[in-house]
Image (cartoon, rainbow, N blue to C red; front, side, top):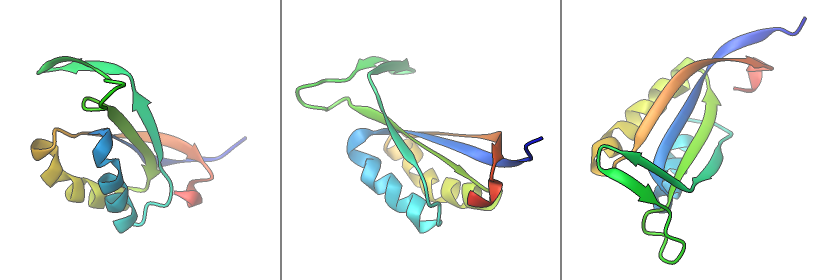
Length: 103
């Protein structure tokens, strides 16, 4: 049977132009891997939004990664100042992973 360990799955919803800034924060806390997922449309307290193919003004992405508890906490502290000022959303949840030493 495969052995799993508990890690944190972190998702950050961010305006696409801010992705490089978020990735710098991820690197600052020594999280070695992440994925960027482009989002076509969504909605929230401020209403619905759609990706504008022409200007990219409303483009949003999710930056997804897996990390241990310590690194997840460090990243949350670094991202916290941007949550309100830049309208980011961060979620952190428990996941079971195989090869936990990689995270």
